[in-house]
Image 1: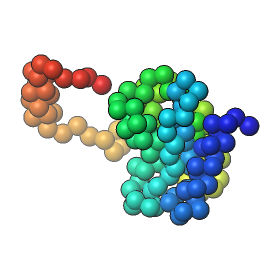
Image 2: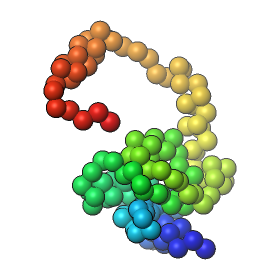
Image 3: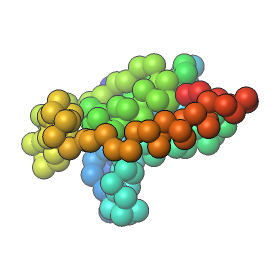
Length: 150
């Protein structure tokens, strides 16, 4: 068994035993060194965004004092949901290793598959509104000289 996946599994177990949430743990590694670990804390925090991958990303960014995790890899017990995959991409994490897939996750009662299906038909729930006013806001931001684009 891969040592980093073993750590992700142990992190998930820690969260389960504490009643924090589902069986999802994640470990972020850079240059073969563990940067951060995280587990699902949805129940603990009453926050649906507190997935294991997101918690690990928060910790890694804080530890490295950056929002750019280029050069990092993430090991996670479950295939990342669309939210987590987006966070991984925004963080520039270069490789994702996962244990269980979406169907495995569905088998234990989670609904990740539904979100993948909703994204395929996003026009049913996402609507453009007040674009001109928002374009003005974007213009204000564009005129700022020293800014970081991410």
